[in-house]
Amino acid sequence: MGYGKGTARRGVLLGVAAAGLLVAGVCGCYGPPPLTPEQAEGQHLYAGRCAHCHVENDLGLKPAPPNIQAVLTKPLLPSGAKASDQAVRDLVLKGKGKMPSFSGRFTEKQMAALLAYLHTSMQ
Ligand code: HEC
Image (cartoon, rainbow, N blue to C red):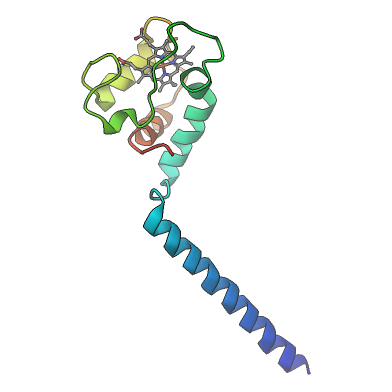
């Protein structure tokens, strides 16, 4: 009796594992690739420090802060300047117009994570 139950449970577990693999496989085909741990950290920082202005414009700035989604996958920044890690790093550290300076707010590791996230499609 006990033996029979154990076998059934193993069968269910195998089924769940197989279904999980199937779902992961389908997502791999149709969705954007999953974020690396570094990109995920950048996503977290972006959500906490940047999105309230750049996505929600919670301060009601006029003109609204530009859309910077996937900004480092494009050749140019919204201002027309050349997009590069260095350019965005400088901008974040110095600020620009109504964008505040984040000098001293990010560690090197956090800055690298933020830039890594801005290289993704940010979906
Ligand atoms: C208080 C609102 C605010 C916050 C917070 C903010 N920004 Fe901005 N950001 C702006 C505004 C306004 C501009 C447009 C500046 C201009 O061109 O005068 C801008 C411009 C930019 C640009 C485009 C620069 C260019 O040359 O086109 C990038 C990239 C950018 N921000 C990244 C970020 C990142 C990354 C963060 C988070 C660390 C962030 N911003 C946080 C308001 C904000």
